[in-house]
Image (tube, rainbow, N blue to C red):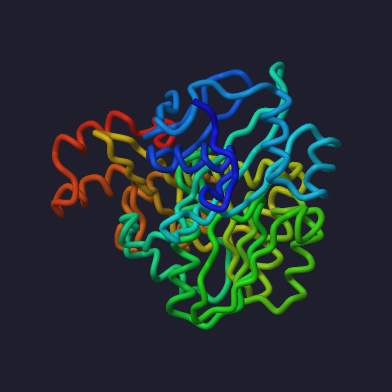
Length: 367
């Protein structure tokens, strides 16, 4: 068996055939390495991609290299050559008329150029579909401040953010600018004006792109991961000057997220940044994606800035934040354990599912 050649009757390239086969298999990711079997990640587990439509082994380094580069612009090819890796976004029109969004990551290893593709369904799930707590709706009507979405890689942060932005798009007339690396979900026409900018494709470095965005009269900014002191400072500046800012961190709990932000600053600036954060923070939403019985489910820990939370941040009593969350349901806060119990009582999750989920929750959340 070999890959079909591109013809009028068969318009998909060999790489696109692999992507379609992975999508049909229900995969979240596709891994390609020369002379190896293609692998997919299905419900969190890595397994070979088995399909009647494609060979079991990928072609040589040279051929796979040609396939992968066919997806790239000249600018992206130069970036790959210079840096040895590349991140990009793309779309594939499926035969049923739906769009499959793709987040590609290329890098070199001992076998040659290797690729990992994240497969993203074009339809953005609603907040109800991801079982987001009711407080999310209230957060989306804030006029300004910083909302952090945190969690490990693959925990569903991008999906949660997309659900939130699309909810705003459906309900409010706002000017929204996103800075993405790369663009994943594409937002449809709604009440809002949404401008999606991809780093290194539509703009240069992150810090300059964020400064440019602040000059473009936005109501809402989605700026991705806060990686360093300058990005945190720009995010807080935006939040203080009348913008609602969404950002992410690779942390496992609300308390650890605040610690991470503070860690970017030297001790002699600690008091100043704690004061600034205590005034600008709106909420920290930490999430974990669980896979149980062929079902994937996101759980959310929610910290809301209250007077008590602001005081703890200002006084550097971050270790007390989990206690505030535990007792803060009246303000919209919740632990993941509390969400599980609510979903069980509501009949959305079975007792067995909840029991298994409790055993899978990340212990770092409670430390």
